[in-house]
Amino acid sequence: MLTPDSLAGNPIQALFNVSALFQQPVGSSVTCRIDSLLPEDQSSLVTGSVNLTHTGRGIALTGEGEANVVMECTRCLRQFDARVHFKIEEQVHPDPRYAHRRGAEGFEEDGEVRIGPDNSLDLGEIIRQHIVLHLPMRPLCRADCPGIREIDLDG
Ligand SMILES: [Zn+2]
Image 1 (cartoon, rainbow, N blue to C red):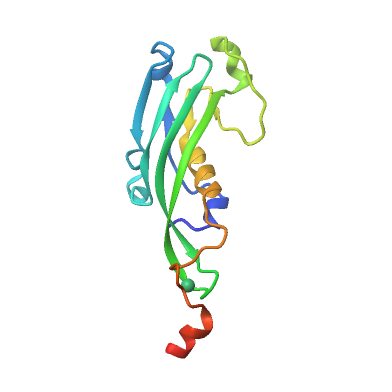
Image 2 (image 1 turned 30 degrees about the vertical axis):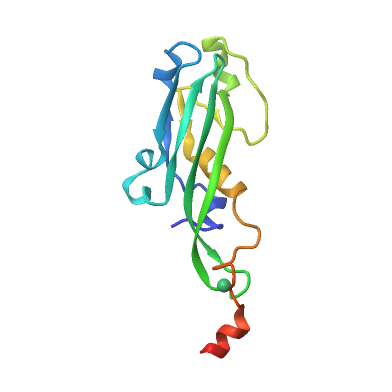
């Protein structure tokens, strides 16, 4: 289960190894389904796909998907299952500490996910960041939610 609280941590386990892609010519790309990257007990939480393109010094990511996030309605304060649509556009580069191994340039940017020394990319963290960016500011269980008072009167 994903919640705004769990999304502040590290709830999505999805590592992708980009070694094979780095061995392909620049411009090569691969598309993977997000649910197929997730452990079985998480595979229903996030759907969609991510395209990874070898850019020469890193990987360009594009994709979109939907996440099931349990949120609290700002009117009636009940919990409900929100379907959060998200898009991904991101560039990732090798960790600069290891970049010299393949002659790539390192970049410094706060919060940026980097390709690890073993060529593993934490796609789960990238997906998590983009779900958080697309969380509704004022979640409603339904557009015409009457709020807490009317629901109490309805019994
Ligand atoms: Zn509501």
